[in-house]
Length: 467
Image 1 (cartoon, helix red, strand yellow):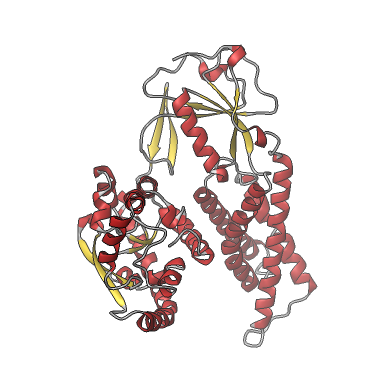
Image 2 (cartoon, one colour):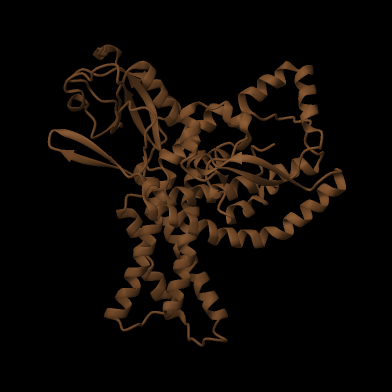
C-alpha cells in the first residue's frame, strides 16, 4: 500500500461543512433545551396531579413546584456525564438506550433518596408522572433537536479519513449519508507519514483498513490527532453491541449475539403481544372503514391473503386489505409488454411507482399511510409475524435475494415494519433492502425495535416513500 507524501496528504471531501461544528456551543444548547423540556414535564405532571386531586387529595403550592424543578436538574447533568452532549459518533439506537437508562436510574435514585434521607417529602405521584412523560418525551425531543441542528448545519465535528482509496470512499459515502452520527469527513488521503502536521481544528481521524493490504507500521502513533477511530474491513458483521477487549498485545471485539439469548426472544414476543393487543383494538374501526371504501370502489373480496415465508422458513398466510384490482396479474404483464422501462424498474425494486394494478384513490391512500397492513396484527397475535422485523416477501422477491440474505431472514419472525421501511419504504432498492434487513438481524436488540417503532410512526404520519 502506498503512503501519502507530506505534499499530497489531504484532499477536501466536504469543505462546506468545515465550519459547521461548534462543540461547546452545541453542548450548552442541548443542555439548555433538555433542561427546558424537563421543566415542562414537571409542570405537566403537576397539572395532571391536580386533576386527580378530587379523588386523591393533595396540597400543591409554589414550594412543591420549585422543589421538583430543582431536583429535576439531575437529569440533564446525568445526560452530560453519559456523553450525550453532543454525543457525536453514537447511533440513534445507542442514544435511545442511554437516554432511557439514565432517565430510569435518575428517577429511581431520586425516589430512593427521598425515601431514605427525607422520609418522603416529595410527591411520589408527581415524580412518577414526570418520569412517565420524560422517558417518552426526551428521546423524541433529542431526535427533533438533532434533526434541527442537521438542517442548520450545526451538527457534527470534522474528521479526516485515511485509508486506501476504494474503501475510504465507501466509508466517506456512509458518513455523508448517516449525518445523524455527526462525523463530517472534511478531508481525506492515503496513510500518512510520521511527522505530518494535523489540519487546524480537527481532533478526529478515521483510519480505514483493508484486508487486502497491510497496515503501515506506526500509522496510528503517527497520526497527530487526539482521537482515532479504526474501521476494519470485516465484511458483513455485527456492528452494534460490540465491546472492546484487551488481550494483552491483541485487540479483541466481543459481539453480543442477542438473538441467540432465549430470554431476548421471549421479551420480543411479550412486546409483540402487549403492543399488538392495544394496536389491534385501535385499528379495528379503521380497518372496518377501509373495508367499506374498498367494497364501494372495487368489486371483489375486501381482504387479501398470500402465502409468505416466515420464521425458520415455515410458510404462513399473511393478511392485507386488498388495494389492487382483481385482474392485477394480467395488467402487470400487459404493462411489461408495452413498456420495457417498467420491467427494468420492477426488476430493480420489485415495486412500481405508477402501478396500474392499484385501486384508484382508495388503494393509493391505504398504501401511503400503510392502512392496508393493519390486518397483519392478526398474524402478530398468532405468532406468525412480529411488529418489527424484515418484511415477509413474495416468492418472486425472495428469489431475487442472494442465499445469505434469505438464510439470514429466517432467523427472526417477519415484521409488519422494519428497518428498510423506515429508511425509505418503497424507494429502497433491492440491494439496499437486503443490506438493511441483514443489519437488523445481526444487530437486533429491544432498543433497535423501539427505535424502528418510533420511526415507523413518523414515516406513516408523513406518508412519504410509499406507493
